[in-house]
Image 1: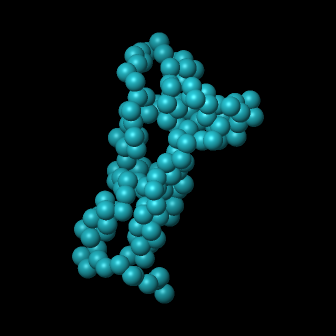
Image 2 (image 1 turned 135 degrees about the horizontal axis):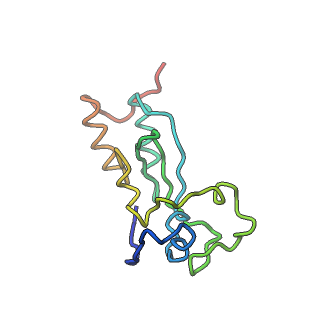
Length: 140
């Protein structure tokens, strides 16, 4: 994930509201994650390899499990980083907490495993499965 943020001073006096006010990149609105079942079989990883073969798609594992991440800027972001539909934004946007966000640390710092692309996941598959090949059939 691209974490190019301007340097800002976030002190103990900076509350969640003012932190968002200082944010011009709206990083939390530039990607979507979807939790997936833990991949176990070679076939599961074949599917994940197919997914991360697409531009802007990656995968990661953290304390909550496995996720596919889609780098896709929200269509409602204005040029200054504010939301164009703030008053009628979806519930998930309303419930998003920024107590600890990408301004505090890059999201990757919380990932146990991160696969931003095909090559990184393929390398992991080759280590995980001693006899890795592509073209693995679905489990019976």
